[in-house]
Amino acid sequence: ASLFAGLVVRCGPGMAARVRWRLLPALTALAAAAWTVALGAADGWSRLTAPLASGHEYEPFAAGIDDIGELLRRFAERLGDYPIHVQGHPPGPVVLAWLLDRVGLAGGGWLAAVAIAGWATAMAAALVAVRAVAGEAIARRAAPALAVLPAAVWAGTSLDALFAGLAATGVALAAVAAVRSSRGHALGAGMVLGVALLFSYGVLLMAVVAAAITALAARADRPVGPVRLLVPLAAGVLLPLGLAGMIAGFWWIEGLQATGHAYWSGVSGHRPGAYLTLVGNPAALALATGPAVAAGLATVLTAPHRSARLLPSAVLAAVVVANLSQMSRGEVERIWLPFVPWLALAAPGDRRGWLAAQAGLALLLQAALVSPW
Image 1 (tube, rainbow, N blue to C red):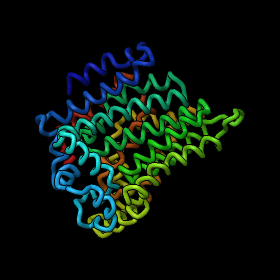
Image 2: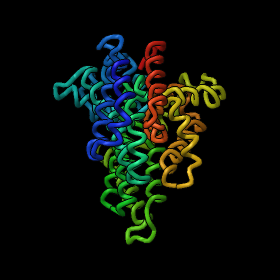
Image 3: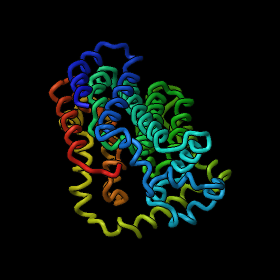
Image 4: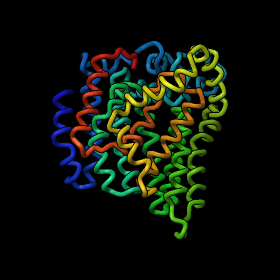
């Protein structure tokens, strides 16, 4: 991991400035995946799969399911009987683990590969979105910082990394839809976000971010204005949720209500809300994003051009809402992974000193912390 970090610090800014744009998102995604694997495997390859194999997780639970249809129909009703991570999410992660098991890809290894691929996809999608909204120069500047985020310590391996990839793909499609005035891209963005909502209730905030980007980045002087883009975006979100209810019997609102009840009747009702809201959660997010992001946000949020600050500002507002909602009492180093790539777009990834600080913090976290994910 240290050798890889040194390579990115030495060569990353130059490569990001020179490589053809079409290659840059893919190269950044590959680098982020390699960084995540290198950190996660520091204590042995088994550490990449161990977090997904505990009794609290989706894969061991899914392995014992005989009738997935019955599970979906009674998911909200029987939520209290499920492992803790299953209780905290819609049934999407369980269905994914069950499908992998049924096609011969059982075990934590394949699920870990999916999670890391999701994290890598989030990096690529964030670059595509910021290029569409704010220009290629900002995307090239941020790319090296996205490759060595400290959050990779928790992305390898938690399925929240997959949720980050799904949400980021939806937001990127929404950004492209706004710039191109494309109702097809808006519909696609909504459908991806709708699927993501079947994996994580928290993606709702990223769906709101996508709507805000669509409305603010779209040009009112074009035939397809902001309103005409928001309609297919909303329709796309509702389509997977409606199909899940009508065909599978899982109604998203009922699931959210059941999860809220389980959340407050469990450990979260005993966690110190004021401390976590004011200190713990912001500190965990600061560690996950790193010092370069903090420095970059201080500059970007005061930038004179709205396009440069649009994405980080919108996601920072979503973080504030998530924090005040009290539905994130702790564990945000994992739960807030979908927010991290967008805040990292503000990082000065063209500065080797800041890149070294990012990578150094990640190595310190990996060496010093014991975490169940």
